[in-house]
Amino acid sequence: MAALVDAFVRVVGTDPVLQGLAGGIVIATLNLVGASLVLVWRNPSERALDAALGFAAGVMLAAAFTSLIVPGIEQYSDGNPIPVLTGVALGALFLDQADGIVPHAHYLLTGSRRTDAANPGEGIAALDNERLAPVVLFVLAITLHNIPEGLAVGVGFGSGDTAGGIALMLAIGIQNIPEGLAVSVAAVNAGLDRRAYATFAGVRSGVVEIPVAVAGALAVQFFRPLLPYAMGFAAGAMLFVISDEIIPETHTRGYERVATLGLMAGAIVMLYLDVSLG
Image 1: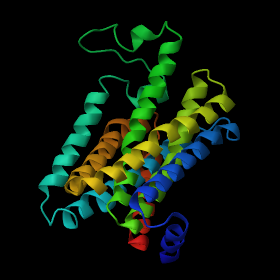
Image 2: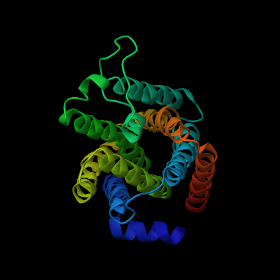
Image 3: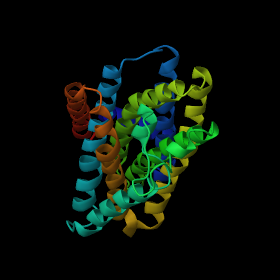
């Protein structure tokens, strides 16, 4: 794996910000690859999608700890867990509050109705009569959940640990493939054109993940004390998405065991990448 790190440095250079830019491009491209699978895999089964999303959750789960939380505590805050754990709490809080503005991703994947408990009949269900509203909400929700992924890659490279940044880039990129496919299937089920959405997904992912990755790298370069907080924030946001979105979504259609096995496979892949590149 050292050869991979050397090759990456030869192509991109040693500037952490440029590395963050390259990492953002890679994960956005793999998101496009996943979204484009809907053009050839026209009707993936629910079982296959749950396994794929479980795999994505496993990759993110392992990456949150091995590439963000643990190094954030051990290497960048002198063993003091408070900055990283503060970042974890802030990342989870950010996603929690953001979900009050846009719908949960699993609503968009299943197409089920969800209403505000305090105001039945309002919220998402009340917008069903407006043709454009579900599409707009769809884009907002998926875009929101791409932010922590891009941030994690940018922070990883911004820390100066190229090998760790590459591990995160590969992990996020790999999990972007099944995630991109899942949201493309949801978009097609909502009535959007396959080719048009596959193209749009790549543009949307690039517009979000690439600048966020660069911003993450820049932030920790110029404000070094923020690094452990930023690593914790990215990890907390990822953990929130796993627990609040992906796992519930993969346990609603009777394929819990397949999803769990997918999660274990994803965690194993990420752990292998982390050890091999570390």
